[in-house]
Length: 347
Ligand SMILES: [Zn+2]
Image (cartoon, rainbow, N blue to C red):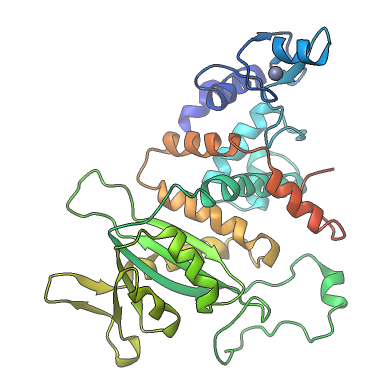
């Protein structure tokens, strides 16, 4: 986090740095996209105000103002720019809300709202980015993560069934309804012959169940046709024969890795390693709600895929990604859950 020191002197410096990340090619109006903007006086919290000449004419007003944060995920936040820089740095260190609150000296509820915003921003932009296909050698596997109705006492109370069974081995494949949502993992193996190749690129999707009908559209959208595709012998993956060079290892027969005659290593060990890392990450939240599981998983996915970069590059890539959305996804999500005691931040 050392690179943040110059920007943590005061709110104006922090705001200037954030603005540079949002508009690296010059400031444009978030409403109309025009670059005919003039800086005005700053807000009390250090954010810069601008007047959009184009919007002012269009609306027949003397001024049409916007700030550094208008139409961004930070717009309705009460945290100051300097505090946000700190929180984003701590967020990148994979800390939970309690730890972020302690380290940044803010309230725990505020820290909770902040990580939901940041995780949601990454989910909406980076995770849902359709231009990020996996190719060459791709492994697929699924795991199951316990997640219930944490923090929603009334939802548990009004349910007709008994509470989620904890610590029990479930028969058959678990589902979200049974309190163990499956996560589908797809990973493009790192190219070991290329020194500069990025880390193994992973895509993680939280699902309701693992039927073929659920996973097939995700795999088709994420994995390029013609790729080598490695799985275990679970029947949900049988459809992959049509579009991919599909090879399986037979875990049931004790086979975990094999070298085929053409030299290809058939295994899912890259994905197994990522599951270990993901479990370790999710354990930090000490019980996780199903509402937020996919957001936490998106943060892990983003940080894993940027793991080969310098800390500052990851920090700036994360913020650029988050600045590219207005937070509509989180607003919709908050709306759906409006009868629940919200930890999301929209008033
Ligand atoms: Zn405008």
